[in-house]
Amino acid sequence: MFKYPAIFLWCLTLAACGRPDTIVEQIKERGELIVVTRNAATTYYEGPHGPTGLEYDLANLFAKRLGVELKIVVPENFSDILSMVEQGDADIAAAGLTITPERQRRVRFGPSYQTIMPQLIYRSGNNRPKSIDELSGILEVITGSSHEESLRALQKEHPELRWSSNPSLDSAELLQMVWSQLIDYTVADSNDVAIHQRFYPELRVAFDIGEPDKLAWAFMAGADDSLSQAAETFFEKLRASGQLKELLERHYGHVQDFDYVGTRSYMRHINQRLPDFIPLFESAAAETGLDWRLLAAVGYQESHWDIHAQSPTGVRGLMMLTHNTMKFLGLDDRLDPEQSIRGGARYIKINKDRLPDRISEPDRTWLALAAYNVGYGHLEDARVLTQKRGGNPDKWLDVKEALPLLAQKKWYKQTKYGYARGQEPVRYVENIRSYYDILVWDSERPPELVPSEPVFTTDLLSL
Image 1 (cartoon, rainbow, N blue to C red):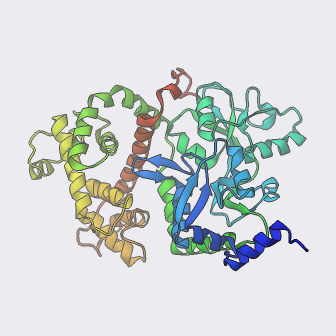
Image 2: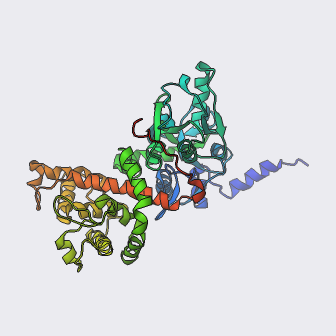
Image 3: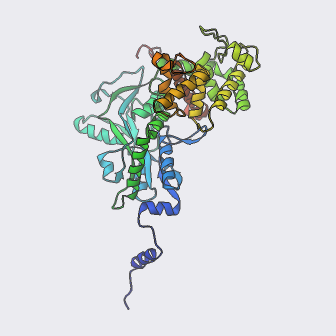
């Protein structure tokens, strides 16, 4: 009697049961999109309000578009990411992956959503190499990274080029090692460098390596391209709606203008001034439901945590409140840090509560902070102008483009409250966003990863 092979019978059974034909249908049937990524500031991490990161936000939106739940998987090593997609253990690799020829032989890439530049990083105070031939010291990169591929290509023209590849550390840890002078150089993507320079201000870009690279999601190679096609449509709609631009601004818009002197001064004040005020910020946060680190960031932007600070316009104290605002809040001593912090927190909360309920975070917080700086009436004027110009008055990305128009007669004559120095609240909010990020990082980093800081008298001279 003829016996059918087991695999043939299995296929017949699946066909009889109506097994989904495409990868997308399989994902929808199981109700879950499995995304492999890496734990990093540019991709996915646990923020103060839950999971965040550009890759997480994109993957979460895509899962919702498919009508399924998102499952995030973070492998032990970076080099495992593509293997998981190849073997079918993950549907997508969304990990800030550069499209390279080597990787294209292993996986299918979707549309590019961001362009970055690979850069050689060193620490100021050390000699800056101007080319590959001038490297003298330890260069370390991530095993399996696109940077390792680039170095292999460069080695053909520069046979003396040597480096170490590390399978267990991520980009943030290698950047920290350069800052700590445990290694001399690493290669990192420009978006990664922009974020981490705020935490390690002495990190410097020696030179760019190669040409700009494009980042994209990776999918299993093969005949079934249903998932990559769905992603293509998803990104097309994301671009057309402006949502991709909004997400990029949310994660990178406030880190573009790096200020070494200001950042180093801020880090010093975190250690020297902030500890005396932390209990007051925590108390005000408990009363208002705001993050104490956000309140502290506002306090630093206002006064550099100086209780005797005074502006040219006469506002005073740690949170720089006016007499009228203090009176409105039922407080009477602007120079009392407890009253000033509590008053500032209440006033931020009042501005947040006045905004329409439909405005979600983090836009709600950034708009409230702009109102704290320029006044709620001027913020509303800017939101009206935003709408007139075809923007979204509920999105900080759009409103911050309209705020500077309040200083132009053509525009402010159309508003209820008239002229305002509209560029100031934009810079105000962007500074606070950076100060807040640094405080979150500083308060959550493991103590064992914080080395004793080397002291260099030449840091400022070497800029």
